[in-house]
Each structure stands twice: as C-alpha cells, then as structure tokens.
Length: 421
Image (cartoon, rainbow, N blue to C red; front, side, top):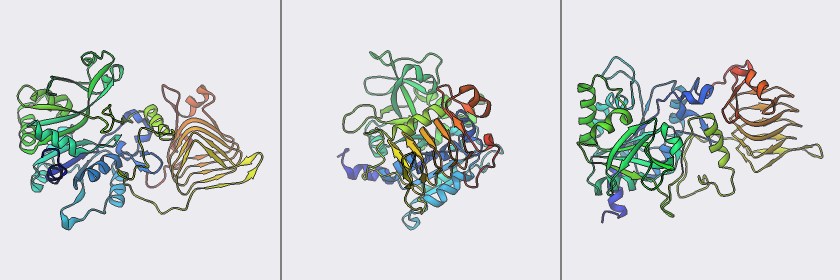
C-alpha cells in the first residue's frame, strides 16, 4: 500500500512546499548584480526557479510558497506572469513570500530564519509535512517518492542527498549514514570532506532539500531562535547537525528511477558550471531532457515568432549547427556552432558564434567572432568585436572565469541594463 499512487497523492496533498529563492548568488559575479540567482536564465527559455517549481507541480504538490529577499523584482515578476495558472478555489497556489520582518526587525539571516519568519503563514495552511527546497538548482525530481520514504521510515526529518566528487564536496553539507540510511554525521562545507565507505573518490552531499514533519519543524525553528544566540539560523549549518542525535533524521538518495544510478542534479552557482550545464543540453542525448512530455518544465511563455535563418550566399549564410535557438531569434548571414541562444537574439552577417550561451534580447553586430562566452541579457555587441581569443584583452574589459569562460554584461560594455532582467 505504501508504494501505491493513491498513498503518495495523499501525502502530496498534505504537503506545503517552501522554495528558498532569496539567495544572492555571488559566485555568479555580475549575473546576479541586479537579479537573484533563481531568476538567472537557463536552458534557452527558462529561469532556474522554474525547475523546483515544475517539480512541485509535476509531483502533485499544489501549495507552494516562494521565499524571496535579494533583488527580487525580476523573480517576482516572472512568477506573477508564469505561475498564475493555479486554481485558488481548489486551494492551489504559488505564493510569493517576500521578506516582511514579520517576527524580527531584521531581514532573513539564514535559511532557517527565512522559514521561521513565515511561521504564521505556514500554520494557516495546516500542512502535515513541509518540503523545504532550494530555488537555485537544476534537476527533475518526483518529491512524492521522498515523502513516501519519509513516512515509511517514520522519520522526523528527511534530507535529499546525492553523490558528488570528493574534491567538490567542500561546497556542500556532507553526511554519513548507517545501513538504514539514518544520518549519523553531518558537516556543512567541511574543509576535509568525509568519503563514502568503499568509495574514496565520492562524498554523500546534501541537495538542500528537506522534508519535515510540521510539528518537528516548528519545534526546531523555535529552539534555534530562542536558545542558540550563536546560531547562523541555517538548516545545513545549525538545524540538521543539532538534531541528528535527538531525532530520526534520514537520508534520501536521489537516484534515476529507471537505472537506479545517481540522477541529474546541477548546482549552477558559478559561471563555469552555468555555462557547462547550458551547453550540455545541446548533446545528442543530454542527461537533462527538456523534451520530456511526461515531466514538462513550466515557465512564462512569451508570444514570439519562430526563429529565422536568412541568406544563403557562400560567405554569408545563416546557419546553426549543434545548437539550440529559441523563438524570436534572427540569424542573419551568421554561423552559430555548439551554442545556445535564448529568445529574441539577433546575430548579424559575417559573425561567428561558438561554444556560447547568449541570454535574451542580445544583439551581436557584423564581423564579430565570439567563443566560449556567456552574454547577459540586453547586450549590444559592437561590429568587429572579438571575444574568447585573447585572455588578457578579455580580462581588461570583461570577467573571465577560472576555466576561461568570458562573461559580458551591458555595464561592462558601457550600456544600460534592459528593463525586465
């Protein structure tokens, strides 16, 4: 019975999801100077926040709160435009929860504090379970299976986890588990991560996804708020490490339901990882399948004409090879290779673009050569510009990542940011 769809659907109806979307995302440098990290474009037509929100809807969780704080205007506008299709009369919603100083006179001080300051709103919905999600990761996941495991294990808290290379584990919460997947150790961003038994090259890392039985969530948030003056009020740093010896805290390994291997999950928190994750979508059989009709990614859908490729002269041919090109784009006598173009990008004649991620509303002039770049929304690239060929010249004008990806924003070009980042 506990694996039946009816059982899982009952659990999802009793669950309130809270998406933590107030992060600054400083590792993305100028991409998050005027927008929150969850509002960063991804995948040709989406924003990062669309992935956890779509996971909720596809999992049958129709009560979702989005907690915002840092430079949230474009994020709020995107959610208002793209996520207003829920039926309020059925008590379905994607609700915005901006920082309001409801309990304290300060802004949110950590992930746990962000939830604490919305405690009265959570109570008003009377959920049996609360699902805490990060709003800045890219993946597809059925949260119903995690809720079912939470109930079957009689857990107080369940932590979603994934295997990561040991050298990357310093950026995550790292845990050790027993044979029944109960967490026995948890350390946030350890300097020396503990490897998994028998797998010295891997560590078991938190995905920033938590299922709480509601009473436990309330008790632990209030305990952290009232008793621990030294707390940073963060789930990974404070709440989880403090409860693993008192409560039943279980791990839920995120695995592909078909092959049982670790599933696709990306923290696109750096320029390099964002660039790579976008270009992975171009592969013949990418790990993240955006063409999956059974698990669609929802977003605000602009009404745009189809992409257009014009001119067919020998030296002036509009082409795109091994690329993804969104609606509204015009490739006018230019060559696009292994690149991803978001909506309404214009690329003019005699220009070559390769290994690039081009955000919406970018205009690239004639005779340009662009390679291994991320170009932010609204940039106007002058005629004859060369990017990605001379590192020193690029560093003088733009930001160059550790792996050589060149980030270009309107401000770097002396231009104004467009309305609606």
